[in-house]
Image (cartoon, rainbow, N blue to C red; front, side, top):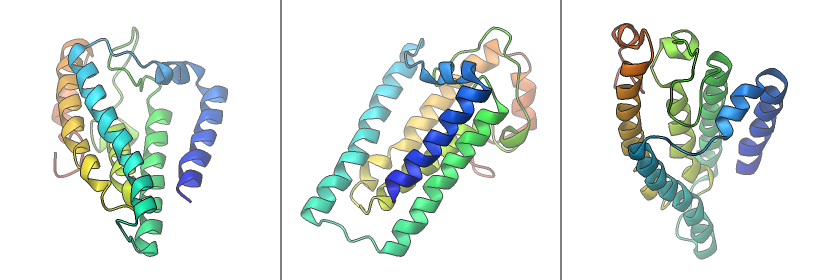
Length: 186
């Protein structure tokens, strides 16, 4: 079920991007961070992310966890919801690159999900990552995933330093949209 929740939307988003925004698809495929701090954050986050997908396999093999099926299904729904938010962000912001940079001609986006939080794509990714271990039937995989909020906070703080310097209107946007990641929290 988890593979369907992950790969069916992924194929639909890929189809959408190929047809409607190939430039965004190209930006999303870029992997090399230009900022040293971001490279370190991404490396550490990738290790936590990878282990959060390996541990459920061992968990199932050795029977460490027994996650009730309603929790598994509910977690799949939340993973899918995170993916939907991720897609809505890409529809709203054609500059939503995987690599942190300000593109030539890039304009500030303050509508759609960006009216609620300044980094809605990270909120979608956070939901996907936090609920994936339960969707895969593993309590133990929650341990490495628990580091995800820390990595996102570090990434967002560094990204915002750059956006304040390089993206016109970003300072005013921070005054208008107060929360970075979670509405009402941070």
